[in-house]
Image (cartoon, rainbow, N blue to C red; front, side, top):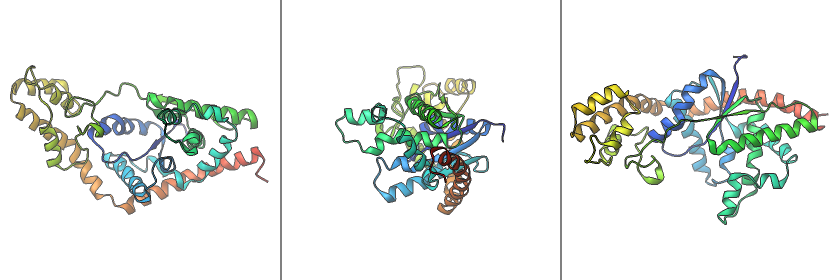
Amino acid sequence: MGDMERLLTGIQSSGQLHIGNYFGALKPFLDLYPNYESYLMVADYHAVTSLRDPNALRQNILDVVKDYLAVGVDPSKATIFQQSQVQEHAELAWIFDCLVTVSFLELGHAYKDKVAKGLEANAGLMTYPMLMAADILLYDTDVVPVGEDQRQHIEYAREAAAKFNNAYGETFKEPKEMIQKGIAVIPGTDGKKMSKSYGNTIPLFGTKDEIAKAVMSIVTDSSGESPENVYAIHELFRDRDSLGELYKANKGKYKNLKEALIEDIETLVAPMRAKRDSISDDDVRRVLKEGSDKARAYASAKMADVRQKIGVGL
């Protein structure tokens, strides 16, 4: 494991997942994480910038870990941990806050967007990038998989590393972003991007009946050769050749095609749904305790060095 590059990614619950989340975020991580020494961090302190409902936050932490375990992330092959259980994150973020300027933090996208909308931004939202920098730099992370819209966070992390290294000597490795390219827009039941806000989703861990109901609601266009919206979703589950044959054999029989799609989704989803149902809250707590203990051992050694360097370690 020592020769592998280290990867860190932060996760927060986004409520009930749909197949767009699976193909857009979960599956790319699933394909990626075994090639690295991977750290999967439940970003619960980041959530506090916007969520003030303790029961919802507690549930979100349990749910997001269940989601990742259910789709096949193996806790023996990735360190799954809870940000708030490793206090060094908040401690290092404070030190970084003391190295960067307010005007630098005011350029943060999340902060700027909120202010531009005339909304009141809390100080946590403003200093959020320094907590994220701490998340990444504490573990000598090599790569951070992010969407194009999050590239700035990694630039901020590099800036924090450079500022600290310049002030106190070489301490932090500057991470690289891994921009998740080529993740296609996953179409929803109405042909638009699958999104909860459009109400056009197919639930990832839904029952077979819930999946069937969503698939049967897919908008079909009778003018084309085949129902395009059905096909666009179907090609996520089957290769083009077998799909071509299926659609040719059932030309004009949209119900048959939708039923075939239901079966193909169910084949993928049923084992994940069963696994998710079998994971208890205590299982999650156990995984998070083991992962957080491991993360803390690394983070506390790193912070001992940081404390010596800044002069608080006596």
